[in-house]
Length: 107
Image (cartoon, rainbow, N blue to C red; front, side, top):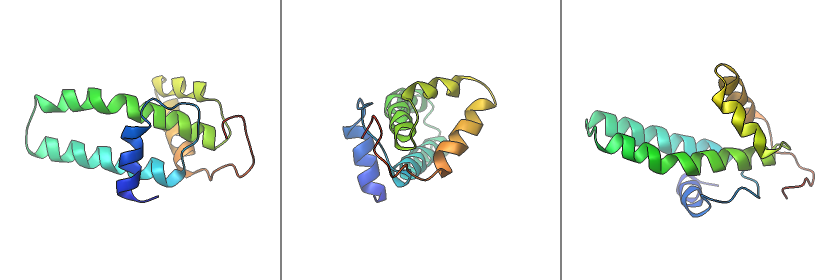
């Protein structure tokens, strides 16, 4: 999946927590959110930054749930992102672990 397709998928599937998302979709989405944050920070559009964060939080969390499904884990693991230090370890694990090639409860 390419950059544009991943961004489209992030917004189109922003409430989908019952399927899977590939590692490439995960990485492209995080690159998109990073680039948007950098641009808004450079433009010093302070009022837009919190608004954009609110807009991107739901697609980002649901993408993370789908990524957890893709590597064979329950989406409830996303709650570990709320735990300091564990959140970084979980993010790295989800970002680098290859997709589970076998059928699992999420597809």
